[in-house]
Length: 599
Image (cartoon, rainbow, N blue to C red; front, side, top):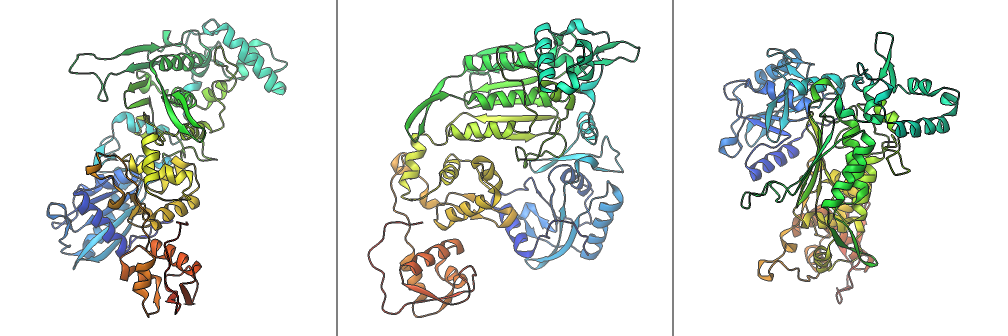
């Protein structure tokens, strides 16, 4: 029994085996897979997982595996009834109904239920179990478990169904006198110059009304809007004390230093309108940063620990896109500096069609505080010619691009519904040690982005197509080609296929303990003789050669291309792009001296 899930193929038998193998290696559930034994019927906790997967990024539920026994296939006593009950729970007990793809599959001699749960559209969130109600029946996936949403997180999801208007609300009893005279004059001048047809012939109050910096309060008077106060106010914190920014510099990676008793190295409350907070936050961070050296094509270059462009964009985004609803006005934007990272967090997660996966992509932009963002397009940062923001959706790209140019790891983005967190690791990926290590691999013709991928893996981070694409600034097609080339060169190993694909360093190029962690030069693996020996007098396909040699298909394909160029093998039929194309040795031709490595 099954129900269709549009736009996504079902988990097939091969993928199911890969999923379970990964679970057995890890020893527990993962964020996008939930396993239950389910011998006594449909577990009640399935409803929580249906909610959490729907509200997060989707996932796979497998019933009929026993986690306590190493994910052994225990099977289901009545698979057909289990599938019917599961489908009924999805459609009748969840709001909105969950459009899952439910299948019964044969796995290791037992029948198991495999259900793919899609993430629902943001306009329908949160998905919840009707029997518990909206406030207690909505969950989110955190690591390998389901966590009940707080009332604030439910509110954030509900407000994200439409365009929030908190920033356009009037601030009772606060008029023109609350605005900074110089900022307001500069903004009015810029509005008249950049939008003459809308603002040229209006007086000062007319400009402020049209820009919605002044709005009616319902009693016939004009007062400042919340957006106007935050963008142009002399001291917005007089009315909203926590709509500010806090900075703390901690002495250790975990925060306060318990051994010395030092709680922090610097702590600053940054207040004022948003333009002033951006300026002052940058000043405070500069005061706490040190300079470091990076390797460039021209030698070495001294730069700040963190590129200023990246920091400015992240701070601006946090102040502009934070949640301004009444429930969040008691929480400030926070900057925390540790020896190994810098973290910026703001209340309220991502809004609209923007997700962590598409963050920074062209054409993907949305703002929770549309009026505030529009006003800040024309508000200059004090002492600078630039305005606070462009409102072009280019901030994330500028942030990642500046880090890439500095040879640093891309920031991590964490959308927690109630908060959005940007973390900048404090290290250079392509430092002296990493460059020497990559050189020790003995590979030529690697692209800059492939070197970046190797440095990411060498630094201990995980890698998939999406993270590589963001880190290197590539489109999906190029990222796939480059990663497959690294697999073919045997510089990385691919674990899983398609959407489950992950990449890691193979054991042969890990650093050896006897060398004290120092890299040592290795010759690239030459697989020509292995393939020639496997061919012998036979005619074999690429798939058959991969099976005979134990090499990956990508590696066999690469060395067959080299052997064809050298005139040692030829095809007998079919296209070289097919695994089933047959190859044979050319009689009388022998492998000569090793050639310089070519890609």
